[in-house]
Image (cartoon, rainbow, N blue to C red; front, top):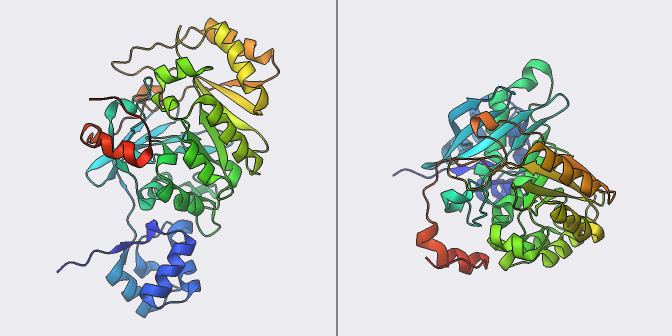
Amino acid sequence: MTIEKVNLLDFDRKGLRTYFAEELGEKAFRADQVMKWIYHFGCDDFEKMTNINKQLREKLQAHCEIRAPYVSQAQHSSDGTIKWAMRVGDQDVETVYIPEEDRATLCVSSQVGCALECKFCSTAQQGFNRNLRVSEIIGQVWRAAREIGLEKETGCRPITNVVMMGMGEPLLNMKNLIPALEIMLDDLGFGLSKRRVTVSTSGVVSGLDQMTGQIDVALAISLHAPNDQLRSEIMPINDRWNIQDFLASVRRYIASSNANRGKVTVEYVLLDHINDGTEHAHELAQLMKETPCKINLIPFNPYPGSPYKKPSNSRIDRFQKTLMQYEHTVTVRKTRGDDIDAACGQLVGDVIDRTKRTKLKVQEAQQIPVKAI
């Protein structure tokens, strides 16, 4: 009879200490030692943990494992971006590494597919299968750090920033998101600054309220429209939580947060002749007057079969300048990795779509209205 082993990547520090005490009969400091081996040294072999006694190593070998997603495919962009297809169970999610002069950012997925059906996002077109486990979220960071392998060679951190902007809606996977974030921030984990870990949400107010006061990281919001009518057309989640409800929740979160320094990042995908007119810019500027923010404009990244187009440079420039008249901080995101479909909104993975078979279950669990099939 094969014993199913416990994956230690599924535990944050508190959970690992509890497991060691209750299941292995070991003290907390032993859990801390193992955690340091896993995340500081990228170790997945208990026999190599030289400061752990032989008896405990044998116990760990018998009952536990350190199993991260593995890379089933890697694509390298001409700009240095790397997109990995990471195998989770029988499917792939996509993880993107974006190197820059002063930082190295990893874009991490939280779900296999996505149930939100945003009209401009290729991930949404794949449907939804399931939430990722803690080990599958933090395992993307662990695997990427091993793949890059810069720390031992140069003394540089292989990853300086993590953004939860990959496949899926992070706040619909709160049970597994929070422990994964804790590991990213923990000194025994990846030890990242809370200002260097960003969670992006499309407007799951219940999840954002749950995060408030529980964990402090940088927040980015996927807004993409300046009014409810247009937002509901391109983002059905707006029918559940409208813009004003969403922004009120955002203000509550940033009021309790040090990581955000009093401001939220607003993500706004520019869709040609859909939401990129001067009138939309004026409306957006007025909308955000009561919510301190910096606005990040994202020119649409095309994908096969999409009905949308990227605006011309002149329309993008005019939209930005209109917003800046209101003294908003406005940036235009530089597209990275579009030649390997690794840019914002282009991630697809390999998803077995359970959406149509489980729409009622998702609706009940997440309280998001869905269209009849």
